[in-house]
Image (cartoon, rainbow, N blue to C red; front, side, top):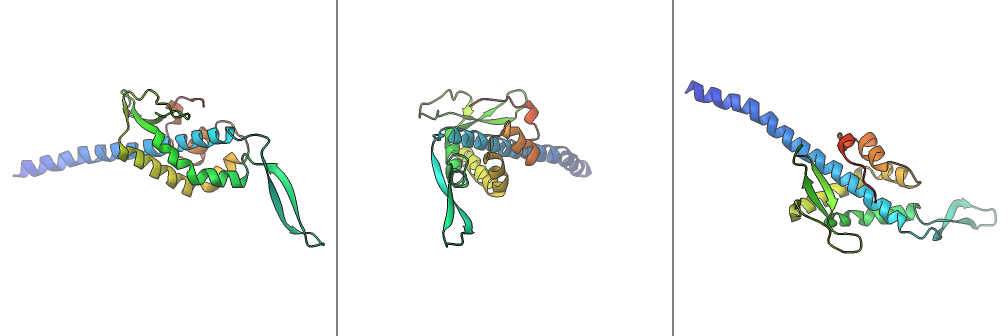
Length: 184
């Protein structure tokens, strides 16, 4: 009787930390993957805006004659543009699938539907609706929690936004060094 209780106790000390580690890493992989996919989608959307497109930006100051000054600013990266993007960007997560590295068992998230609607290679990719839902929900949480940082990084052009935002600023990716730097 004592040995059975001792065995259960020993197993709980071995497996509980292991299981906790696996779930923590899986959650961390999901947050990192959602952040990196979010950055990819925002960068692509910004690149699709006509550089000649502008919007009027009114000043909050009122002139002595009662009018407000307005200036033309580029639409891409404007506050209005970024707000519109952040409202809808997480819908793009439905175009992603989950791949598991056979060596490290780390999860990464890759596009399985091209931006022109064509199916891409989805071999060895999890396309489960629950995974997609989790990725979308995580994306939405990141947008909500880090909205100020997203505006800061995307209001002007910056290099290596994925690493700067997802690793250094937010700590969503602790293993960014091991992730290949892909291109749009």
